[in-house]
Length: 270
Ligand code: IPE
Ligand code: IPE
Ligand code: MG
Image (tube, rainbow, N blue to C red; front, side, top):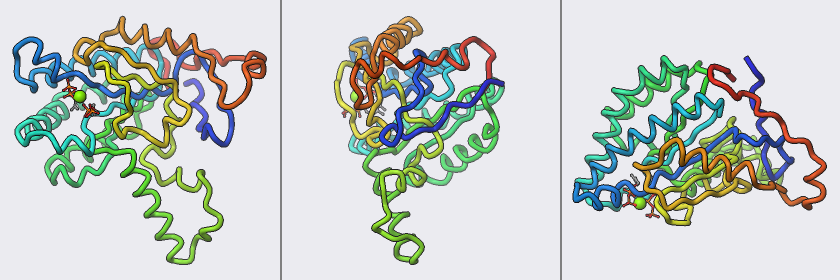
């Protein structure tokens, strides 16, 4: 087993750098347009999108990327037509049933972040069972953001701090950005190194607002159902070519050694 990635808040310290991202976060956008372009219903695009997820999970496992976070349903996606929302939730349930065993066999730790209560008890129970089954797996942590919103996440973390303050356990004057981090949904995970958004839009759409502070952003016009291994390789190549400065000068950064990817190669574990 190789070493686990160090968890560093990028605004409190400069993290160790590697040409391979340790955490990739993806907005999987463009399913609807993919389907529309083929004269198919939007849900056909979402179904096809599940295949692209499978391919990306496999690629991350093979490359030794330890964290992959996927935006599956935003807190604003409830604004879509009721039928699309219902079909999306059904697809999520079906994909859970079909994929979780396979994920477990591949030693993937599965997690969901977001306000999942709104999905109802059936889906909630399935999510919990999948998380429990896979909790000790160490090959790849796959986090699905569902009914997730970056603003919701920051607000729920603030609520927890406020409760501590109200109970007299926390001095409000002592609050720093780091005080919030243990209460955020992604607590205990490194911030994303690479953010990918497919589908051509160049926006964050309320994804991981806090955690993307120093993430490298990569936008591609490719629609999510067509995002394959070669597309991912292009995103990784773009990432590897960037100079991440975290507020320092380029000269300072050039003197810093890059870490060799800690877990490259199929079969290496965290
Ligand atoms: C992303 O694809 C999937 C979800 C938001 C659930 P879209 O459904 O947003 O596809 P477009 O953007 O309409 O093409
Ligand atoms: C972002 O995509 C959310 C997901 C991919 C789950 P949207 O399609 O909802 O984003 P906007 O509405 O175009 O910003
Ligand atoms: Mg979209």
